[in-house]
Image (cartoon, rainbow, N blue to C red; front, side, top):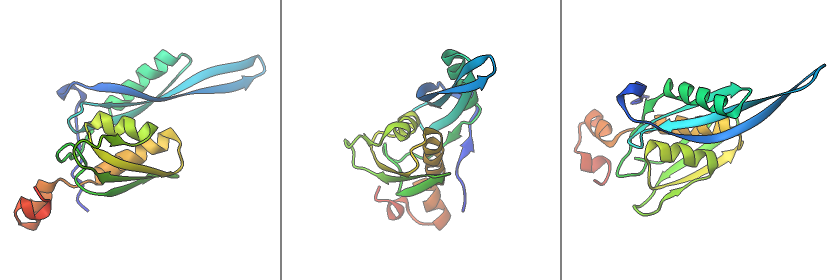
Amino acid sequence: MIQNSKRVKSTETELHDKLVAVNRVTKVTKGGRAFGFAAIVVVGDEKGVVGHGLGKAKEVTDAVTKAIDDAKKNLVRVPIHKGTVPHEQDGKFGGARVFLKPAAPGTGVIAGGAMRSVLESVGITDVLAKSKGSSNPHNVVKATIDALLKMRDPRAVALQRGVDLSKVFNG
């Protein structure tokens, strides 16, 4: 299968970040409990570029900053067709399974928590989405990005098949 995903440099575009989840972790030592934080962040330009990152630190703000820096290193470009996804697609990562389906204009982003953050960051305005299996935010974010990376751009499909664009997708 041909992947149309393209790595993107963070300097090429203006990115907006969304905090998906913050997890407080505890390490028990003989001196007591040591608290730390793990933050998951999604960054995107709302024009087809998205990335995710994980940051860990003793303070929440430091963890979020690290996560944003990590997310900027993992940017990819995904196809968007008239504000929605080009076609139905499944994605999976670990125990998380997601399903994305195109929606008519005006529908909005019908998705929960972690999926919503990814879809809004990439710039999708109308989509029907379902998360199945694990609801772990790490895996749901990665499964959503997996589904988006499997998407094929209508123009690329038309070119590959050697047919007119209107025959691939109605428009």
